[in-house]
Amino acid sequence: MKLFLIIASVFGFLFVAIGAFGAHALSERLAETGRTETFETGVLYHMIHTVAILAVAILTRYLSATGLLYGAGWAFTAGIIIFSGSLYALSLTGIRVFGAITPIGGAAFLAGWVLIFIAAVNE
Image (tube, rainbow, N blue to C red; front, side, top):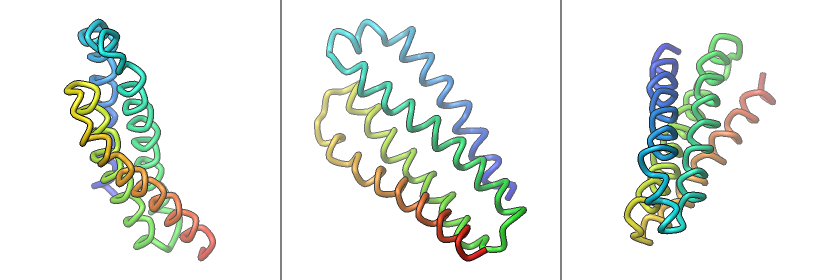
């Protein structure tokens, strides 16, 4: 699906830009606050699930359970925004409430993987 290719390309650009920004412009600040690992976790999950969205776009051409795959793509999209976004916000601001939101994004990631599993089993 073209939309998920577009989403994956935007998220791909963003994870490279955010990762580079964190590694260069924010490295001292993150190190001083002890939140480098938190930021890097956000980037890692952002990257992995960007590739997952790309896979969803490709799989919609080959599997008939496109409704499940679309659901997976949207779950991964929400997961990146909520999971990685909350970790970026937490690492930059230190506001702990962002950490409380992170598991919601993790649940979205899990839902996306379950939907791909169901789509594959039903094929």
